[in-house]
Length: 326
Image (cartoon, rainbow, N blue to C red; front, side):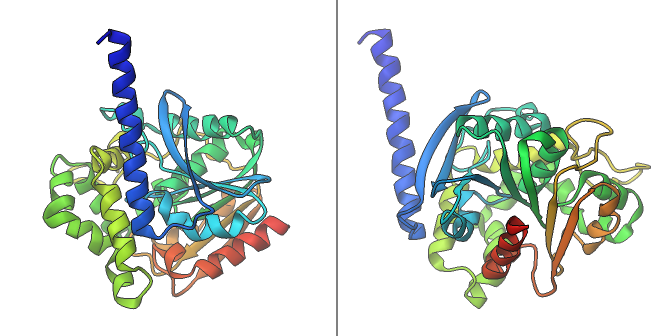
């Protein structure tokens, strides 16, 4: 077999493997047939994304340790009158997982979003993010305000506000201790033990008891976490940022979510939706936001946790709809 034929065969095998995993996850999740799996070669990586509908672009960025599936309810809703797109961010599920920590620095994550929008043929768009996806969305809005119509954040800290809390607020410092473990060498082993039981408990545990999540959801998440390198890819976001509370003996917390030092102003209309029962990212993250965001709306969901997108999808969608109409 020639060298070129060998390369072609390897490429074909990779494509078939991606397709097989996509089908497994789609079947496990009972995915809406209107949701289309696609791939884009952008910014030096291959990103998998799921799309629905046509029209103005709205992009949804997931957090840790989720994947595009976090936004299935939003894709169905906003695909009615938008091109609604939810990528697996680099390092996750079916997207590329570059080795090492440096590829997961914020500047690269921001560039992925810009390049994906270019690939989709849209100069301006609406950006929605939760958790780490929200952190990237904040950074994108700071770096590229000209590219956004509007910004929507769900339970994700603004870099300047969060830096202040990690420096000055003992309650947020305590709530953020998990970040130090996530950055450590044993994080993968700790979180994947017993077929990802710790991650199931963190993300899905309460929801499985109340019916927010189904066993199909659980299977879909475990399949996504089980992709080779996926857990390390997600954890490398924490490692690359070096984010976390002060460590013993340190005078100040390390790291920052910002893409570029000293730039924190958000100049696009912004909606922040916050589940107030979030035990990791506390409501103190809302205090002082108006110092950095010139056009800010805040919607609090008192009974929502960090996973408010899953718990209250209709309420979250309603707030987004209202904001888009303004």
